[in-house]
Length: 320
Image (cartoon, rainbow, N blue to C red; front, side, top):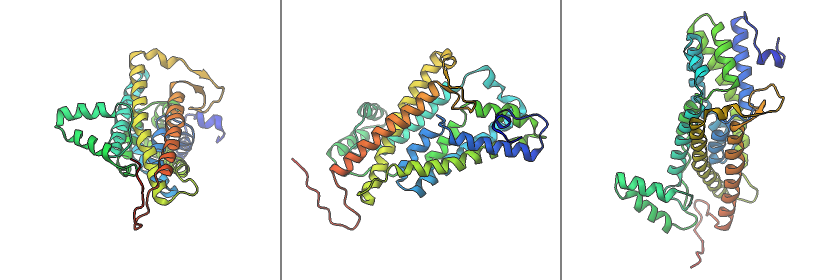
């Protein structure tokens, strides 16, 4: 009963404990596989925490919002309302929303720092025209700031919002949860609990993966302040540029829904590993390309301009 094929194709007539167990195991698999709704966001917040404990906390907080959403989704599956996913492809809308939240979080971190990225001045001017010229002053302050000017701390409260929004994405695991497991429960509350178990399984793996991602920001021979700033800078760039990537792909899917039909099969039965399509592209782009290059750039910045430890007199020479 507990072989991989049975887990991915749950039988009918299971007991409540068996269904809950199936939900948890599916959550573990979902959290462990490179899913575009979890890995890019967990990476962004985890590296910004600069420690294994902080990375694990980032995974926990993100998955809390995700668990709440999956509980609601499973309840909707029991009520038959989730059938909308069978009619419409909502991935494009979800990607755009996730992209907007990611971009907003990244832009907030970047404001007031010395980080320069594409389009940031354009957005600051646009916002300044609506809300006054304070953004213009923030831009001037950033340009006048020394290289060691700190990036704002990463707010994990945004991770909860991210988890809830990203959870509305729909893939192979969600199909099993919503259309096979949830309808077998005796009432809507038990159905919601299946979603909770799925979210908790995802949470366990995201805590582990978050801790591993956070270790990427810990490079030998760097001080704690340097590691902290490197993590924050990496998170800021990944959220900012990754958000733009998510929004762009989302708008592309909305404009051309048929793009969802194009994917290269891998022969692996596990969802997220069974094919290579736009979801795989997003994971590789945001985590691999944007995240990897941002981490390397941040490393070069903090090693080129040493950051003083708290309590130590600054001794930074600025070139003219």
